[in-house]
Length: 383
View 1: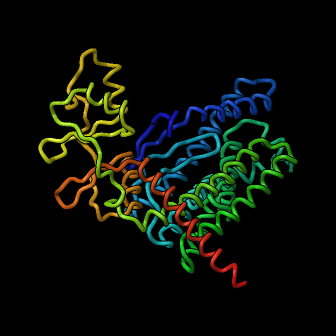
View 2 (view 1 turned 120 degrees about the horizontal axis):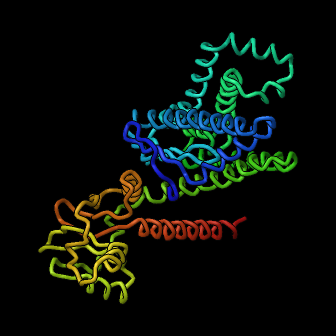
View 3 (view 1 turned 90 degrees about the vertical axis):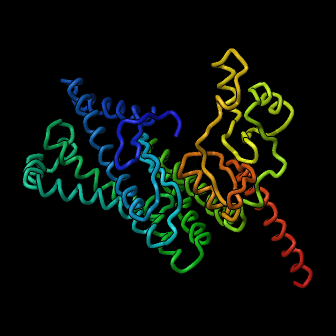
């Protein structure tokens, strides 16, 4: 995800913070500074500490999903923390509904485990603190202390687990619902049902947030609504791409480069064709790939007309022509790449990019709609 930077690496997974994450720290600081008017600085520092600990729990939640995915052989590229929570970039969809069920439950289970540990370690202290507040929890949560911090984290982890298990896609509960439905119907149909429920729930949350003036709840509702729609589109894309082979999608008439070509030759190709990526060939063997971005970087950093071998990428993913387009899309997501080289055995055939896959899906979706229209027109006269 853009506009984010890495702060840690766990089990090969980059833990990143989005630049907007600091807004939640600012919100926590302002809230607790207002709660402690006699010492606003102490209150602000306490608020920042609370938000930091909360998002440590959020990170552990996402690591629960990620480690469960890794146990099923699914790579996880990164975890990104945003003001609305964490996002685990799991590179592909689990093959079996049971696997998705376990991965979805793993995150909330971590929060429940944290809450249990907090209760076991500090249960007596929490009980005494609540009794000392004499029933006024509002007053209790206005006094920064270690006891309040632990009680607040206990409640926050319970809330995280409960909220995420709401059966509204794309929350964890929605994924659990889809996994259960997928055990009895197609993955696409299960996604459609779970996503529809998620969007209905999002509208309800949005209305509730608007009535109560809760801007954060409105943002969460918007996130759920569009996230559910995106999941539906991705499910449709996977279904369409799974039926086609990459050997049918590569450009058979693509321009190629040789080891003696310079950047100026690539510039000519970019200006006179729509092709953005080029294979560098030595005889009949591909030895590298030059992309439009590589050319622009070379023009910005080199004053001379360098050879393409100086800017080409020698490490690139390869696939066989028999692989499905869905498998290629999964490989791109797993490797964080946008282009692969297609082979038939040991023979190089051509390149396929992420843009090619998107175009293929658009064409396949159009053809599918045309077939549905023809079928409806064929049925209409007899009704």
